[in-house]
Image 1 (spheres, rainbow, N blue to C red):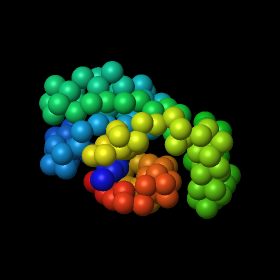
Image 2: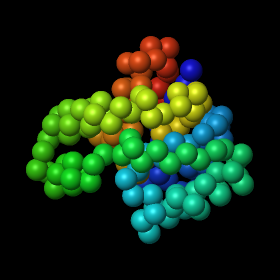
Image 3: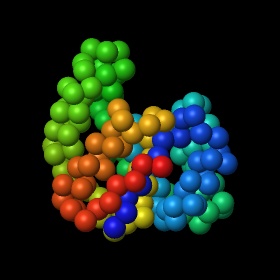
Image 4: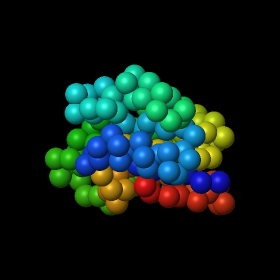
Length: 144
């Protein structure tokens, strides 16, 4: 079972959709807190859902329950907490929200977690993917 992750920042539409197609992604799982901002460009919620289907036959699933709490994200962005503190708080939030009970694990197979960060290093999509791997040991995570 493969689970991909991708960030749209610093990617143009050709690169973004090309990576999804090249990796045979079946469902994009949007885990952004705000998927309708003007900064989202071609990845704005309803537009992205349309583009994914029209360009590549990929399904779209908005999974806001996996987005970080606004205060947690702001504290990290404002450097009020360290990345390590963010990781700990985000993982605790996943447990508190019973994330594993709120997701159909079938969509993870050839699914792709979407967020805005250009790399997974300091992004909640990596943390979420690793959280899923704790429950699904044969899950292979690929950051594209």
